Length: 288
Length: 348
Image (tube, rainbow over all chains, first blue to last red; front, side, top):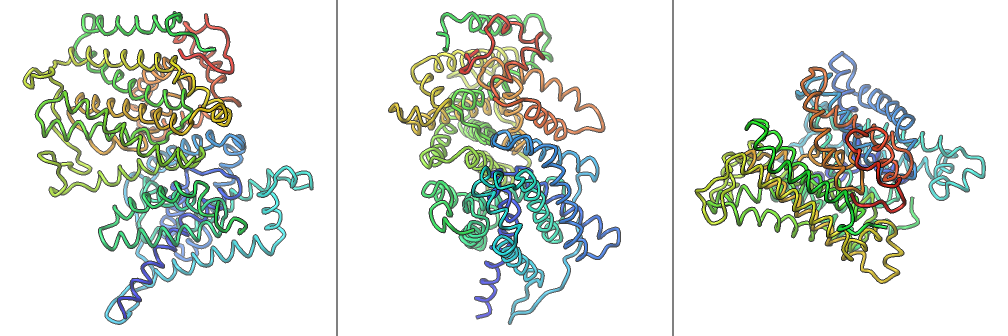
């Protein structure tokens, strides 16, 4: 019984992990069909914000929940204004440019902070479940993954900003004709997507530690989740995370983390062969 | 219109320059310089593999290093096991090509769009890189060859004469052989591009829907193009492995994929000579810049990539050509004679 609970929590944690990693990327992709190849480095930036400000004496929760999204969000707006803005409609170029940005950020952070692993201890202790003990932080991850999804759904469904965003997503030209400045919508979307990514990076930092090249460890999982999910922000991210999270966690329990990743990719390839537009290209097409 | 290869003076000039370097360099330069140039030759073959699939098949792969690494490891493992290098060298073309065909099947028969293609190729490379890095323990060995994880595989055999495992090529012979391979790949690709198959693939690059409406099997074409490119990249990997007599997981790294893209972009997408010039110029540049303390390789690569993308206005190929003409006159004087860039660019 205890073991079952542990396995369920582990799988939930794996799913939340993917949701956290992919949410910011999914927002940007769903809105603008741009894949931000520097996504991993945005996560890294969030991580560094948390670690550095914690070391400077800032409360870790404040650093995670306020500073990280703020810094990375602002950085995202800057990137959008300076780079992405010129590349709308040129998808391949935007991939190349953001990849250049990714390399630049890895190099830049290495120059500033050095190529060493920095870390803080994971807050909260452990929770006992029967004979087993798991980190309480797992529940923080699960909570925030759920919160992300609910918050995005709520904003998109019930607010005026969400309405404008959905209109722009469905038909940019018509939205523009109705007086919406779509370039601002895109800028805001990129900023919010980056902020969410920064928050995720901040949440992951205590678990993984930060190092300039940490992004590569996450981009695989985030990209696969987003493209398998397809264009819908919430339904796509959720369905893909659930499916792939279960597969990779199952594989990880059986063989180890490296093959978990490989299984993730293999599942995604087969899925994309069957559903080239991602899960939400065929199923749940009308969902958010 | 594409010019027939036989009537294009640029083609003969390229081959002539190649032959001149092949036979001349060992006479004019000392051994150290020859070994340096060998590096450029190997990387040029690698650049050509991406130049072909991107420029003439319209397939933008973010994971060309996947095949480069696969070829390198195939060569390393099989040559250590077999004890001679002719068969492993052939295998290092065949195996990556087969893997490329398999991956291509999933991607092209699934009709993945450009974004998805970029992401899938990149992720496949990442996973190879991770798995190979993970193979440090002694339990990860294939025959006599230990994969060695992040330590890589040392003491990879130097190429030997076919059929005679003890007759190793000395550096000058190796250089000549590699130069010969580069010329063969160049001529082979030029002929392939000028053939019916090549014309159809250029047609697919220009307009996929129209090509399929005209009755060409776009998916099959793309798989074949991708497999050929993968095979050439794999061969370049084998050349790299035997040149260094050492290979580590960095062959699979994103940096290696990024380099290929940058060379091809810098030299001009839709050309074959351009990427070779890209290799020479940018490798030399990063060698020079790499000696500066306040820069590292990632910064240089990233900056170059971003500048290349942003500095080019709409329409990639024509602007690259235009930019190459004005900016790199001294390197590309030959192209001035050609008429200005057209919609379907010629394959120099």
